[in-house]
Image 1 (cartoon, rainbow, N blue to C red):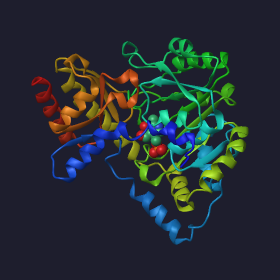
Image 2: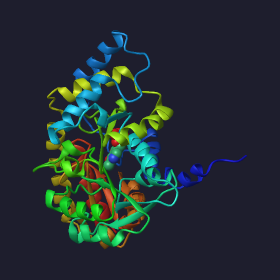
Image 3: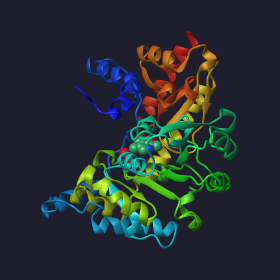
Length: 387
Ligand SMILES: Cc1ncc(COP(=O)(O)O)c(C=O)c1O
């Protein structure tokens, strides 16, 4: 039978990246004692008030179809949040999606097609590859260099631009590196985007998980209002990935043009999830502050321990849920290291899951309790010393 090209394009972008994680889960199901540091799932539950808000909304009968763009109260709550960053944002600038992932997918489908290039820092979040190639575009890698702390620089961006480039997919705070771009770096990146008439799609899902210092975004610059689309969700900020609630905020024309695509894909979102999300965005909840403190402390525990090991270089994150380490000095590549470490009782992601530029890296998740971090450190140290 004939299948569409999209299935071919996406065939190589999924499963293999998560093979260590899947094997870890299989081994744990059979009773193996493994510290799981693979995926970025918050280790604290969402605030109980979110579950209560969902429940109340369902009891109130909010279980029917919703507006394709998003429920009015949620659109307003999202618009108000972004209007604090850039006055003038209204509901007409917002589209609701079930998570950042769908928002990214729809946005890319709306901005790019066959032959178009999407610039993205390499290493990059594992699902970006699929999001870029699904509609026929191709990835244009911008090297993130260890000597620059894996920060995207304007010079490296300029060097990667081609006549096909249409979009810069910008992720700050960054997964997997934890780098947070500052206002002056962003201004230089912006100059390149303007010079080449590029869209900027800003994935800001870790906005609330910056450990110290400020979060800066090109979305906040009024001069860029027609060029920047911000995508985000409550998955990380509210420790609520399973609710699948996110959005895209951009120019009004972008939202108008994307709405039919969004409706074709989704036919609206769940009203009770929308009510809960509006409540979450209007409330001052302690979840993000708790995660910031936990993830910062655990990143320090990991970095202090890894730095003492010969052949290992740890990169201290400024934000997010992960820490990356260069283990190439041990003589192993990231894949071999991760698979062998799994047998030694620790599951990490091999860097290759985050692009060709990350082959010598591993990524560790900070979403396990401190005791598990300490146990993982001991096992990693014993593993490296025995190499
Ligand atoms: C950089 C980045 N973007 C997007 C996502 C997907 O987030 P969501 O749960 O909102 O779809 C993740 C999840 O880990 C992520 O790390």
